[in-house]
Length: 251
Image (cartoon, rainbow, N blue to C red; front, side, top):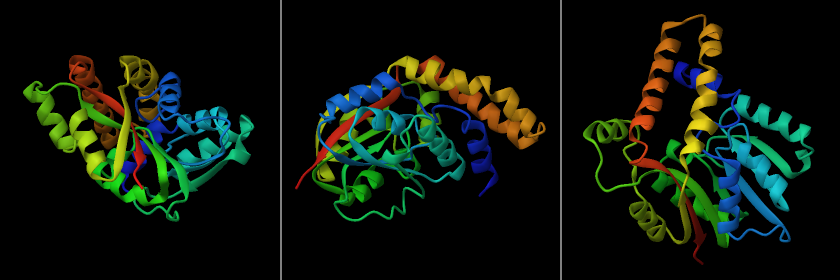
């Protein structure tokens, strides 16, 4: 594991969320996807982190959930939390890259991924994961999205470097349509999903992180990059956010 990845995991593993999101928004996505507790489901939560969405899905639905993340540290936290909440029998944790999923074709009723698909790219992800869904199966994925057609040059430049695949919702929906899905729902995560649920808890962990890393120069630079990202969102949050996309696999 490279140093940057190790720093990323150490900073985030004590957090409930490893990206923007919220309990109310996960519930909203469940409703938009028309997932019913009366129907047994097989779900894969891809890029689950420490399991905020996994645990909520397990509480809300009659489901067997495969929870996938590349980080054994994140998966350990998920396993401990699932045990504490009496959900271990519903959740199968799996340490695995989202690009090397060991699933069978048509194995799942639902593929779920909050704030993670950018790691392999939206278009590649929705195309490669599609085969794991049953015909008529549901994809629920959140993805960083432009909320306007134009934006300040500094913001454009920053995200073109960080994630060149950032695009408007209409462009993302077009990708889904051309990849064998029928889009059925979309909404934008509100500001509190970024600030109260993700950035503020992350900021509170900065001092402890720096202390654990013994004030290492690379760790300090890592924190400065996080601070830059947070400041950019606070300044330009009307221009971008996370879109939650719900789509059905076409037969």
